[in-house]
Image (cartoon, rainbow, N blue to C red):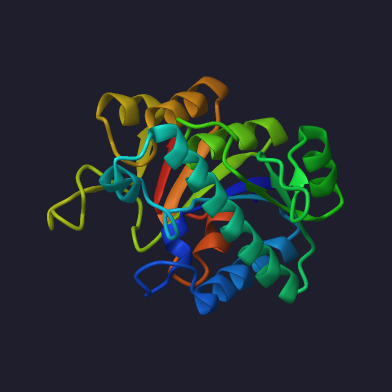
Amino acid sequence: MYKRVLLKLSGEALKGETEYGINPATVKETAKQIKEIYELGCEIGIVCGGGNIWRGKTAEGLGMERAQADYMGMLATIMNALALQDALEGEGVPTRVLSALEIQEVAEPYIRRRAIRHLEKGRVCIFAGGLGAPYFSTDTASVLRATEIGANVVLMAKNGTEGVYDSDPRLNKDAKMYEELTFSEILNKNLAVMDSTAASLCRDNGMELIVFNMNKDGNIVKAVKGEKIGTHVSNN
């Protein structure tokens, strides 16, 4: 079993069946799954995306400057982090939200050593606000935080997608899912699982990645236990 993990939740995974926003039932169910791995003794860091609240396409349609749009996306991740924190604590799981953007009324500032100490004390750390700078995705934030806290693996929980495919399975019925990949293959084949900066960080730091469907019961537990699920990505 992986001892310390970084769970990357897409913002869309928190909207459930709704068109946008935060679905309380979905967030509660996600919290229950996280509680399962917490009770196994796993140390957990979490990064939430913000696509359920604010999407780049919306900003593009408004003709908004990229940096401005990215900061709005960071605020969306803080909202998701607070919602997840509330749901986890409702399940009896102690948590801390650490934000790359200074917002002391609702979250601690992100400090690496403080985050590691929280993990050692058995608290789930939710990293919000991305990296606190524009032009970096939450994928990149996930890999960087995972590397900083010494996580064994990044668990990328997708909304209804089983793993990494050679093309978009929603558009191509014959899309093939990979069971094993390397980060070099992701970069060379331009596979849309994560941005190139995140993939390069994983490759350069020897980080493992598991991409799986979080909507199936027990999948997060299976991923933490190292069971064969989704797509496993490494340097080997």
